[in-house]
Length: 255
Image 1: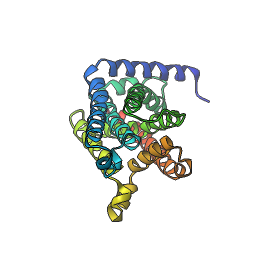
Image 2: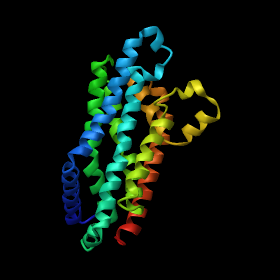
Image 3: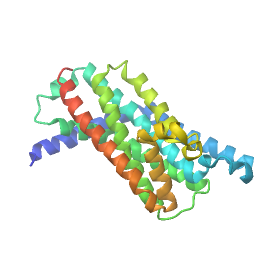
Image 4: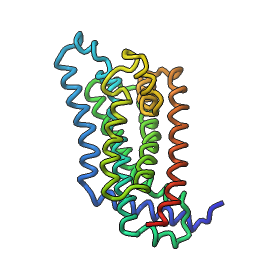
């Protein structure tokens, strides 16, 4: 069992990271405004072209594009987290902090809790916008929202891996590429079921399409189809978090 002092220290460290993210309102605005802006623009376009034309692009319908917008927003968490950690390393903050009784897991939790408020704000904002554009208000929204926040941990872990291994200048462009890859491979911009073939199989090797499927199936109450992508996405989340812990422990001490 962990020392209560270490646990309280981990909470204090998480509070410090929350304050660090709040010191950059541009990051909050960018992380919130861009995903919601894309969502609103696409819904306006779909509504303007009429129901018959919109039927040809089902992935842009409010019940499906909500999941894509959530993934797009969550992918920015990797960027925020990578910037925070790489900056701490550049300033030798972590090297000094390692003199404390905190463990690597405490640091991981502290960084995650420092970024997850952005994830929660993103998801809530997108779902509220979806309701404004015709998403049916059902009890299915709550589990879909919980899934969105849960799997944002995966993107935080990705950011921690890159933040622990790359410099403060190298981490942002790499994580910016992660944002684009996540959007491309998730099925946000095209229907993977419609495309089929090797490309669809390739996309589903990665976790992003599975998170997209989880949210869209949850919103429609199709629970029979939720569980397989949930197991795959959850396995990815656990594995990436474990990798983040190991990489962070090895690299953070080096500053």
